[in-house]
Amino acid sequence: MFKDITLGQYYKTDSVIHMLDPRVKLAGTLIYIITLFLGKSFFMFIPAAVFLVSMIILSKVPVSYVLRGIKPIIPLIIISSVFNLILTPGNVLVGFWIINITSEGIYMAVFMIVRLLLLITGASILTLTTTPTKLTDGMEMGLRFLKVFKVPVHEIAMMMSIALRFIPILVEETDKIKKAQMARGADFESGNIFKRAKAMIPLLVPLFVSAFRRAGDLAMAMEARCYHGSEGRTRMKPLIYARRDYIAYAIVLGYLGLMIVMAVFGV
Amino acid sequence: MELKTQNLVYEYDSGTDYAKRALDGVDITIGKNEFIGLIGHTGSGKSTLIQHLNGLLKATEGQVLWNGRDIYSAGFDRRELRGHVGLVFQYPEYQLFETTVLKDVCFGPKNRGLSEEDAICRAREALTLTGIDEKYYESSPFDLSGGQKRRVAIAGVLAMQPEILILDEPTAGLDPGGRDEILGRVAGIQRETGSTVILVSHSMDDIAEYVDRIIVIDKGCIAFDDVPVRVFSHVEELEKMGLSAPQITYVMHTLKNAGFNVDTDAITVKEAVDSIMGQIRPHF
Image (cartoon, rainbow over all chains, first blue to last red; front, top):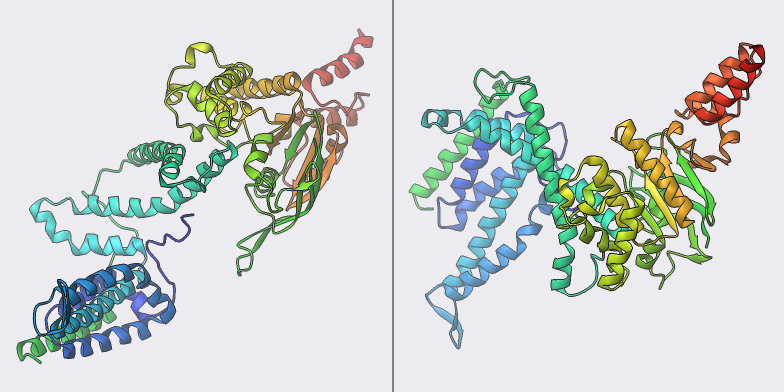
């Protein structure tokens, strides 16, 4: 039932992208996303697309896998393009009732589709090449400066990794409870939407109870090991920049520079 | 009433590279008024097997026949079957969800289409059989102790009045007192209701005392299916499967080898004591 949920859709290969420090990849993805919003013309997407395609090739992740990440956002793309299509004022091409399709609308719709596709694909390259653990590690290290503002960076990162860690456990638990209730004659498959929603109660109540129980157990186990947050804590695998990370930073900054120049000169 | 499997095969992730055979040609027949122990090491396929018996899993190959009818055939009501073949999962207390003990136990009978009154009536019966005191009927199932919760959960399946009751490791995680209480209750239920009970376990000591037939499963195949005494005589094969005979069997074998003419077929502690005393008494 929940087998399709793949948060942290990591795809293991031995590529150079996989080996990069997660901080580089996070920064790179952030910069890449920002550059997508710099310009207003299609020409801006050419270097972005080149950048993206090179990353996909370098990562050795099969293209079919990369494209799979687009599937869930298709409804979003459709909705946004429909709104762009009918709500952009300008030169009316087709008009009936209150709906006016303008040439600017078509332009905007296509523009937004390309932008969204580039954005989602770029973001999924990050999650495809970085394990959730490394991702949260990278975020923690990268956002350490926020500690100055009393943001509990380590604690937030810890909560994120625990949450990610618990997803497969809860999926398994759901399956077990579902089977146990089915053995008692529960019916999850038939009936209208209200009947089905009601049938979820015997599934959801035990699931919540068990999630709280597990959380309590985990907290107890962490305290028993004297866990006390980030103060004075060392890591088993500290994040250290290697030469390739500096090269990657240089490439990303070069790309950013190019995009800024293009935006300034209004290409 | 008869439940039968024919050449039952089940593969996890069938058709992929990760395919793994959990069951490999299982043939068993379960009849009326039996008390069966299903024994196997962790990962032997025992939990997979019992999920076929009430149609929760669909066999990759082979058949499960309920009174001669294939349960996977079109038009067979598997929900109805689950009322006849009651399955209590491991740690069943994690399935409790209602606001009161009584309501929770009523869930099963109501799903079988019984009226409110009939369901309550059956729930009371089931709770009496599992030894839950009436004063707990209106309390929240989450306020009970671990052993009580488990007995309420077992009552939840029992209240459907299944003809076959399957319990998957009903004593897991309980202290010796709770263990004896549960097993004693289950034996009582088997006696009083005359239904067939299948106890699933990895420990011979748990079940040796109670059951009158033992099915040993190893790597997805049935290794032995016989009365306890004869199964325990294969001590070496059992040990190869990561199982063991009851501790008392080892004691008796050691005594026999030391020259005492004791009965090595003794299964329960009481039988063993009688046999040993019979050997010692004449010397006084």
